[in-house]
Image 1: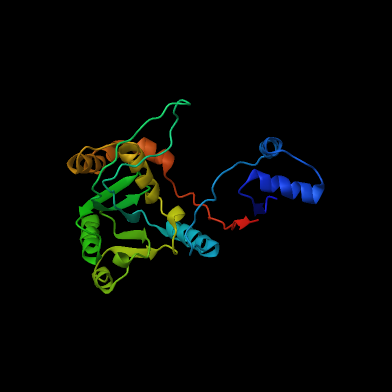
Image 2: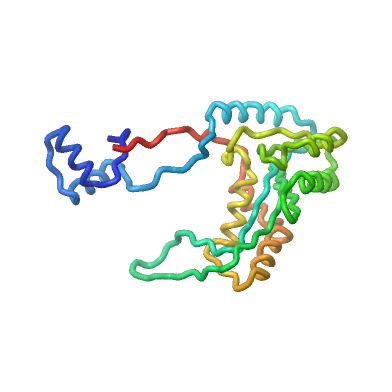
Length: 253
């Protein structure tokens, strides 16, 4: 039964009666399931193109890169984030029988940021752009070179169009930056994704901003000031202890 996922308790009770000759009511079957470690939950969504073997290969190559770094080199994880002016409701502990509300916004304007995170002392470089394209990435890498005194700046990022194009390739020929690409769809392999989660938790979740200007101010305040005072929290939440996402496809009855 752990292989096949049933959506209704009555179907499990029917299966048990057919296979084992035991008759359970819905209440009895529900109690049995809880006693034997079953819970009613959704399957975890994973990217369709995710490949456990490529994840494992990246982790191995990353460790080699990390071990080869010289004292004068730096390693950054890079990604973009696009906070949207829209109330984000998430679950929290609310007293039973009480209904709490979160006002929503009508417009859905976005901001666009690119960030580079070094796990060494949680050094962060973030810049805002009108959009994230090849020109924005080149400009961002210029900014990263200004911020870093490293002889070689190693950058790990995904395969987005803004990250793989002729303009960027031409720029990199004379840059101190060396790019290393992640395997397809790898949110678990880019630690800066966890920074974006901290950002949403501390700035966006269950918060209502009356105007988009209020929203813009809160987002920009996080990246310009607040995040730089959170090194202890970030050190606890963010690391390169990667785990491979394994596939366990759901099978319905």
